[in-house]
Amino acid sequence: MSTSYLIRGARILGHTPADILIRDGEIAEIAPGLDAPTAQEIDGSGLIALPGLVDLHTHLREPGREDAETVESGTRAAARGGYTAVFAMANTSPVADTAGVVEQVLRLGAQAGYCDVHPVGAVTRGLEGKQLAELGAMADSAARVRVFSDDGHCVDDAVIMRRALEYVKAFDGVVAQHAQEPRLTEGAQMNEGVMSGRLGLHGWPAVAEEAIVARDCLLAAHVGSRLHVCHVSTAGSVEIIRWAKGKGWQVTAEVTPHHLLLDDTLAGSYDPIYKVNPPLRTKDDVRALREALADGTIDCVATDHAPHTLETKETEWAEATMGMVGLETALSVVQEAMVDTGLLDWAGVADRMSYRPARIGRLNGQGRTLDQGSPANITLYDPRPRALVDPSGFASKSRNTPYRGRELPGRVVATFLRGRPTVLDGGLVPNFSTSGATR
Ligand SMILES: [Zn+2]
Image 1 (cartoon, rainbow, N blue to C red):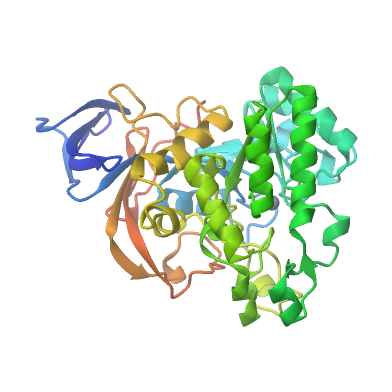
Image 2: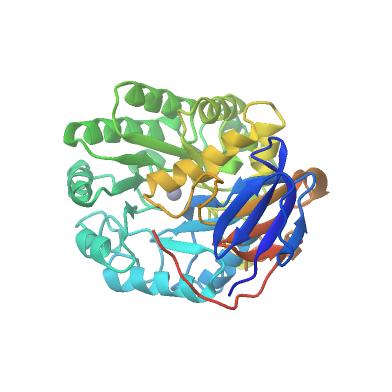
């Protein structure tokens, strides 16, 4: 029999304190003043109880770049960030474009046991944008893939994109597009604007994203399929998505924590820690992204956790790889950008970081409201402390965080995956059982 836990006096979604009894992997009871003498008690006073977070966009790097991250190290980072499920992007080596590779990633996730791992399938073979990958075989595999993406690359051929959108309808899948018109971004280094002109770095125009977002919304409507827009970064993309949603089209979108907090003036340091794809944009874009997340035009926060080794990151700006780690700071950044600014309450955070991403990825066992009988996927978060970010303590194998030495609020105190703590007192709990991901 598994251990029972009694969380005392946590504020569920920031509301009035109550006790939560966890037994046999489920939430057995929620009420004030519960009595459970055999349960292990956890002091929840001052803590916010949230549903376990779900990340639609994580790079776990395995197979192929185990020097930067493994499924195990990445899911440990996820658990520390309050996540109970992540979607692992397909740009591994080999690419996750067959049933064999997605089943391998699924198996590695179950073995590690820190967090459910749902492999994303590539849209095209080898991410080359030429021929569709084995979408049906991946959907039918043990990994039951529902999210398909060539992330890192844009599916820029309109015919291939149309076929992919048509194909995934058969199994209620979704195509998650990395919107980057390739010709408009050849050699691009940072957002095109005043700052790129001043710094003499080749610009990455907003229209390169917006043109693809607009085209894909129209294609999704034309074939009646589901489109998800990855890492929206411009005010113009927000306008297009708002328009598409207004039409009733099946379009969803995500924003990264870093695009909610950071802007392109940071490139002025020439520190490649701020080099990311899509690039950090202007302060006006940041404002538009925050408002869009608050009003629901952007459905969810997704980390785009992109671990890179020091060698590929600590070099000249032009040579450095693009990307930032994000799993272990996401909730703090969302608190800073959205909650402490009054744009979102904790119920809103639960919606944008758990319910909605789970729904987009078609997960049933994750992203559930904290109710009696629900799977006990729970994050306990303390919003009160402020601390300097110290990447030396990260569970991720990589340290490429743009927040090093920056003060951020909040701390994940505990994470429960189907009733089993993966994090307690802010520290990882070794894994003893492997029940694996379920939908
Ligand atoms: Zn991407």
